[in-house]
Length: 535
Image (tube, rainbow, N blue to C red; front, side, top):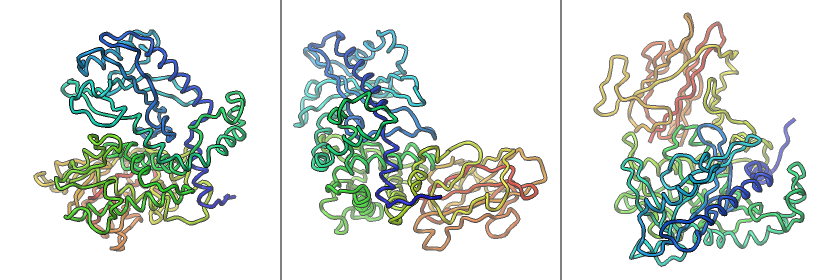
C-alpha cells in the first residue's frame, strides 16, 4: 500500500537519504585529521612555517552528497587545501605541486594509496567499508600575493597549481575557498541559527541505528554539518538531480560543476523556510535567465536588475558566472564553446536541465507517494543506468509507453543502436547513414536527419519495433510527443528496412529512440535508449 506525504515531507524524506551517516562522517574527519597532521609536520624546501591545511568544498559548506559517476554511486569527495609559505621569491607552480606530492609519496601508506597526479590535486583513495568509499583531494597552493604583483583585494586569496595534461606545463590560478566559505555562511546564517538547536537534537535522538550515542555524548557535540537549512537541502537535491540527469543523457562533459549550483543558489536564496519554496525561487530566477539564449540584445527588462549579475551572456559572446569572492574567476568560461555544431553547448544544457528540475521538483502535486523523489533521484537502487534492458521511465515522461505492457520481456539476446547524421560535409550513403557518427547523448542541430541502425545477435526470424519519444515544449506544442511503438513495416515514418530508421531533428529537446526485437510476442532483446539532444 502506498504511503502519501505532502511534498515538503517527500522532499525531506528523499534528501535525508543523501546525507552522510554520522559514523561515516566521523571516519572521514579522522582520515582528514591524520593527513592534515602529516602534511603540517613535513619539511618543504624553501618554505617557512608549517603548512595551513583545511577543508573546502561540500564538506565545508554542508552540501555534501555521495557523487553519482559512471552510472553508479561513487566515493565521497573530501576537498582539502594545503597552503605552503615560501620564504622569498615566489616558487614555480611545478615546485609547489611536487613538494606536496613528494611529502605524500614518502609516507608508506599514503604513497600506496596515491592516485596519479591530477590537474590541480593529489588524490588519496581509501578502500570501501560497508560499501562506501572516500577519497581526499589535496590542493597545493600558496598565498596569492606571492605570485601575482597585481593581486586581488580579497583576503585569503590563494594561488593554486594547475597542470596542463597535454603540455605537462604548470601554471598558477587564483582561488579563494576560505573567502567563499565565509560568504556562503553569511547567506545561510539567519536560517542556520534558527534551525541549529532542533537539528542537532534530532540527529542525536533519531539515529539510533547508526549508534550516534557512541559518537556524540550530547546534542551540542553533533557537528554543524548535520544542521541543514532549506538552502543546503536545495543544493543537495540539485546536485543529485544534475548527476542523474547528465548520466541519463550521457553527457558528463556539459554537466555544471557543483560550484555553479552553490553560487547561484546562495545568491538567489531569500531565507525561504521550506525546501520547496527555496527550489521554486531558484528555478524561477534561473528560468528567466535562460531568455538570454534566444535574444540578440542580451539582458532586457524581462530579467530583473537583481538577477542580471548571476549569469550573463556578454557582448563578446562569452558567458560569465563570477565567483563572488574572486572577480577574476569565471565559472562559465567554457559555456560559449561549440559541440557537434551546437553553439553555447554548456549553457544550453544547463538551462535545459533547469527545465527538468522544474518539471520534477516544482510542477508537482501537493500530495505525493513517499517514494516519488527517491525514484527521480535514483535512491535505494531505484535507477539503473547501463546494462541490458534499461528502463527509460527515469525521465519521468508519462507519454512513454512501457514495453512490459505490450510484450513479455525475456532478454536473451543483445541489441545495440548506432547512429549518424547528415552533418555538413559528411558523406551520405544509400541507406541514409553518413560518415559522421554520433554517440547516445550527443547534441545535434535542428533540421537534420539521423539514421539509426540496430545490431543484434538474435537468430532469424524476428520482428523489429522502434520506440521514439520526444520531450520539450517544441514537440508538446506541435502535439508530437509520441512515445508509442512502431513496427518496422509500418509507414508512419521514413523506413529504410528492418534494421534502419531515419528520424528528423525537428524539435528542440531531449529525445530518444529504443529498439525491441520480438519473437512470438516475446521481447528477446532490447537496446538501451539512444538519447539525442536537439539544440
